[in-house]
Length: 56
Image (cartoon, rainbow, N blue to C red; front, side, top):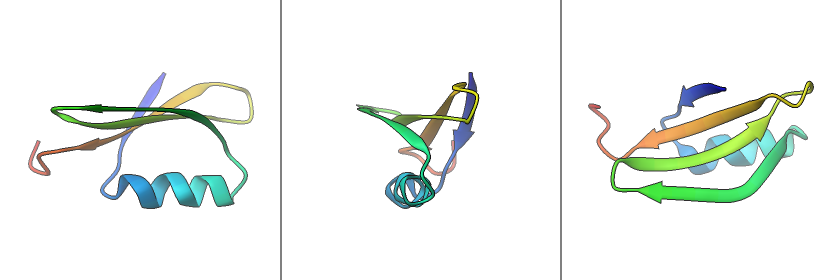
């Protein structure tokens, strides 16, 4: 699985949704950041991560 760090979690998820990307409805928020999962056209899972501490 690929993991991409994003600066604006909500914006990234919304833009991907608008582009027709399949997005897992599950979200996870941990002390170290937010996570969401999307899928590429070949159904490979991709993780989006926005750290709570931007300097991380």
